[in-house]
Image 1 (cartoon, rainbow, N blue to C red):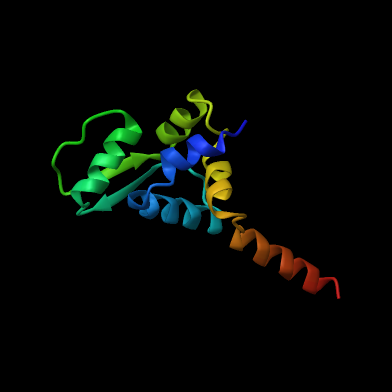
Image 2 (cartoon, rainbow, N blue to C red; image 1 turned 90 degrees about the vertical axis):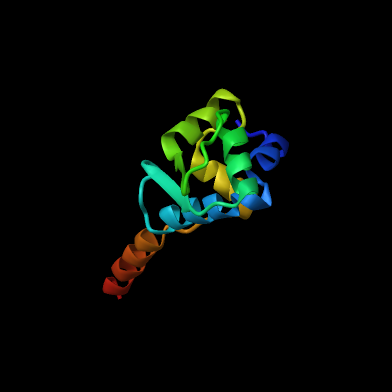
Length: 112
């Protein structure tokens, strides 16, 4: 399931670039997309976009936090996409798990 237009409207905003960058980095490091990502000292527009994305008001604090399982669940319930990796790759293209790729290269080098 993928609704690319709605995904672009939901996560494609420039003020969410930090979020996509960090999710991408998690994938590249082979880390599970669990836990939370925090933006310290967000701009007002970033705070507004996160509040709109999560469907709840954001208090004026020094940081905003996005819980990745909550975000994934919101995207699934809205029938936008199946998971966060799918969302990132639909917006940015394939993301390589660098740890897995390094392991694969080590194994293939050992064979020769």
